[in-house]
Length: 302
Image 1 (cartoon, rainbow, N blue to C red):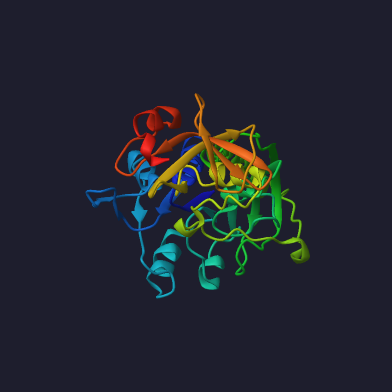
Image 2: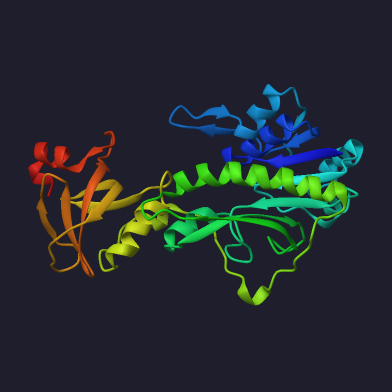
């Protein structure tokens, strides 16, 4: 079975490495173009490209998928199946029709819940107790294809999006191999999704960062965990905007947004149903640190 792999971030690189270690004939890899990264704005390639080059696989990074160039490359590779894992592009119908065994996708949710680009983050943001990964046959509509297999897991009460990513990535890789084996043997099931049950997980943006202290402690806690490792929740105190990395329940109450004190655990702030203590934060230009330590040295900031 010749497999063409399409993916971009770390989540996808785990699946590519699993395909390689499982002995699949990966005939090529498509990933997003290199982009400038960090303060130096040096060009950097995706984790999938790094994994592909390390394995000696040919890599293509098309800017467009609808001008015929990518289609010509894919037809020349003649894959039996195309595997897509967090590629970041929607495949047009002419590409979907190329592989004889179809195009399959590994998605970080239990479809039809959380169709879209950020299913893992939104599961944490919305306080889901359970999530998982699934494999599906791809369709022209985003994440709407027939489901093949699913794997379910609980979401930890203090688990961040980054931590959940790290757990779901190998689950997705294992599910991918299981799916390919079933497709090879002709035993892969197809379960149509119920559109009426579909929910969506749009892209995460920096506009989601500021904490609204009129929300409940649970909602704010989910926001803090859901926006880690990027873009990170924020809160302003004394005219300074801080990144907020960790909170825990407080013991006091007051008008939402009121600073209730700085304890040995951190900065206690009132919210809609009590208070939260900010235990880990980062000031502009600084490093992540214990909030209690920061405000001990900067008392006027609160």
